[in-house]
Amino acid sequence: MNQAIHDASPVADPAEPVMQVARNGYCTGCGACESIAGSDTITMRTSRGGWLRPTVLKPLSEHARAVIRDVCPGMTVRHERIEAGHHLLWGPLVAVRAGHSTDPALRRQGSSGGGISAIALHLLESGKVAFVAQIAVSRTDPLANELQISRNRADILRAAGSRYAPSAPLGRLREIIALDQPFAFVGKPCDIAALRRYALHDARLKANLVCAISFMCAGVPSILGTHELLKKLGTSADELKTFRYRGDGWPGMARAVTRDGRFFQTDYNSSWGTVLNRHLQFRCKICPDGTGEFADIVCADAWYGKDGYPDFTERDGRSLLLSRTRTGEELVRRAIESGAIEADDLPVDDIAQMQPYQVYRKQVVWGRRLAARLARGSAPAYTNMGLFRAALSARPVSALRDAIGTFRRAKGEKQ
Image 1 (cartoon, rainbow, N blue to C red):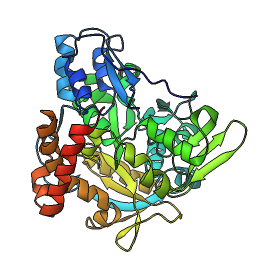
Image 2 (cartoon, rainbow, N blue to C red; image 1 turned 90 degrees about the horizontal axis):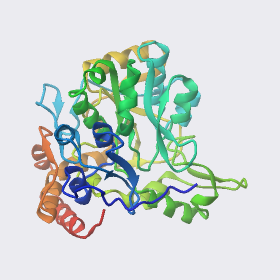
Image 3 (cartoon, rainbow, N blue to C red; image 1 turned 180 degrees about the vertical axis):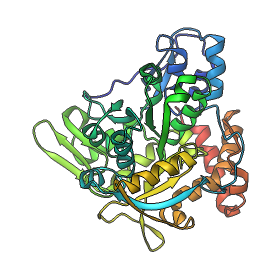
Image 4 (spheres, helix red, strand yellow; image 1 turned 30 degrees about the horizontal axis):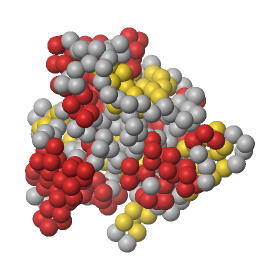
């Protein structure tokens, strides 16, 4: 039941750009390079550090190298231009709401009110898309993630809930494109950024991508973090029948069920706050986009506040709903009109109260990237992301301390 850990050393020239990105700790593990070059050339494997990383099996063509350089979020993340309505902290915004799925099962099983699940199901049932490409738990390994092609409510429900472990949803883009059907894609912010760039190189992908849906992301933990969590719970990966990181409530429990019927659980603050977030890959620590700026629609936890911090007390789930494009806003509006979602308008300033960590990340990432470049000699290029302006809103002393900490981690961490 345990994921195989591989030595991700390349067979081909270590000077290949994708291997340089992985070696420097800037790989997000999205899998785009595998789809671009072909799985006979690049394959994603779990590294000794517990993250998904590319292994180059043979030299890449010059065309594949050029496309990877333009698409890979470990090399570049960019808006072509800053449009009207671009918020300093939150990026492109058309509308902001808070609400939840009206389907009780989707609301309970989803991680934050079932917003993503409700929109995905609405798109299917309205005939707007033929399928939704999204991450779900593997059918053979309760800890592994796999891309699922969802075509009905049962599929959407199976994929509901967060998966705090590595996933490479773009590794199967060739299969998705070959289906040649209208679809929605659900992924992490970095996945969506890469998907948008890749669509510029493939006409069928661009034509059939109806909607890109993302969520606010605090980073991808190594699978070794899950192993540590299981150990603290009193079990191990080899004993598991099922495992979920959260959901079945809001925020929901991390829950392990063994093959002999025992179960172990702990609350969200203990699982994420004390274990999993200590195992984040380095690229996530210098991420310019934890809020899904390249998506049409973003959903997140609409946390209630307590003493200036999010309150993780169990209650009925509530989703923060951001429409980032006119396409996204039209789809959200139709989902509300159809009764799939109940939602109310929300002042933009309320986002910071619900997601204070994302405010901090956006303010310090300019300094973090600079520190990483000084420590490792290179760093991803972030263009038109508003990072310097966001940095000016940070407290200078805390931002400097953060940058120094990043420099030290960049010098010491192995990927």
